[in-house]
Length: 270
View 1: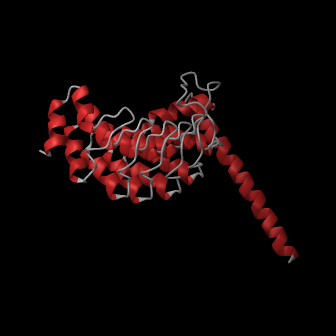
View 2: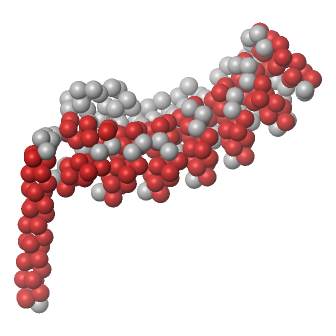
View 3: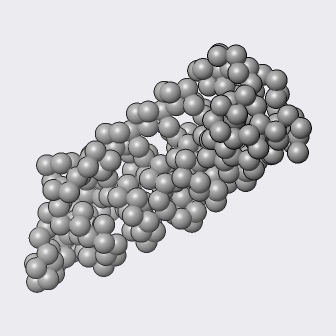
């Protein structure tokens, strides 16, 4: 028993020494390349998608969950403030770096100051494959940012149908509302994308939902002149006689906004 304990202690000491040696070697290699071992330099390499140098930073002991703030990022914006390496890699669409940070225990559910997560950045800027990696790593599908928006909301706002699909497939809530009381279905009606509307409705989005001023999704699509969306919603049997808080129907709203063709479509169904 005593011998086993001694062996364990020796092995631990050797491993610790090996780790120190690897860190020291990696730092020396960075020095030779003229690369400073700083948060700012690390951030620059992440933005560029430099897999080799980012790997060297991690080998040299850089924290995979370091926070980038305006103090260590001269190019910081509110969107980037207090973000992590994983968020930056997701935002820039660097899937190899995303996988590297996940392998190094990067916090997949960390939040920036605006409440956004790596998955929210991926929903806006990155590929379906990258989003899938984050989801597989345990990213919160229905996490909300400071404005109450989810990854699904961002995907809808940017017309990213392939991201909408993978989020819905993995349990994204199509009925969650932001702090302005708008949900993804309402945003899809405003954007006028039939494929996204169809995907949301198929996954249980409430087609009777109302905005704070009493507008239906048909009214929203009509107001913004989204003929294809209006046709889809009419096919879903949405109420064309409903009135908003001002007493207007979808057809009247379309006329008021200069869309007589849509008003006629609503009244005749063709």
